[in-house]
Length: 171
Length: 106
Image (cartoon, rainbow over all chains, first blue to last red; front, top):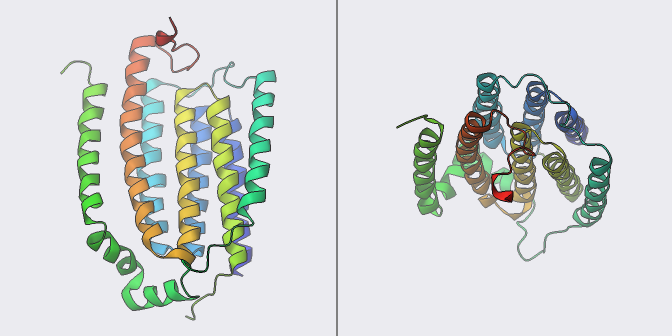
C-alpha cells in the first residue's frame, strides 16, 4: 500500500512538474506547480516526515505560491509570450538534460548508505513514537542546531528589509 | 498503528523521483525565458532536494528533517527578494523576458 501510494503521488508530481515547465501562461504554470508541491507533501508523509509535509503545504503551496500569483497579477503577466518556448535550441538542451538525468538515475538507484552511518531499522519510527512527529524534529533543531536556527531569523529579517527596499519606488 | 518498515527499495525510488524532479527544474530554468517561470522552476529544484533529504533521513537520522526546515526558510527568503527584483526589473524594462534583460552584456 505504501509503495502504491508512493508511486501514485510520484507520478502526479512528475506529470504536473512537466506540465508546469511546458505551459505558456505563467498562471497555469503556477497552478501545476501547486499540484506538484502538494504531491511532494504527500511523498514526505509517506516517507515518515509528517510535520515536514504539513509545513510544505503551509509554506510552499500556501505562502510562496500565493506570493508568485500575487506578483503575476500585479505585473499583469497572465498571457504567455510567444517567444517563451524555443524550438531547436530547446530540444538540444532537453537532450542534454535528459542524458544527465539518465546518468543520475543510474547512479542514485544504486545508492546504499554505508552501514557504519546507517541507523538500525525502525529507529526513526521509534523516535517518532517516543517524542511525537514534531518533537523528533524540534529536539535537534533547538538543541544542536540552535545557532543556525537563530541565524535563519536574521536571514529572514534581511530578506524582508531587502524586499521592501527593492520593491518600493522611492524610500 | 504499527510502524511501517521502509525498505531500501523505497529509498532508491525516492532518490530517483527526486532526480527526475530536479532535472525538470533544470530544464525549465534553461528553456523558459519568463523570469517568473524560471523562479518557479528554482523552487521546484529546491523541493526535489528536500525530497532526497527526507528519503535519506529515514536511514541516516532526523538531522535531514532539520535541514529541510532550513532549506524552506532560505527558499522563502529567496522568493521574497527574487520577486522584489523581478518587480524592479519590470518597472524599469516593462518586461520580464530574460532575453530582453541584457544590461550587463554591453
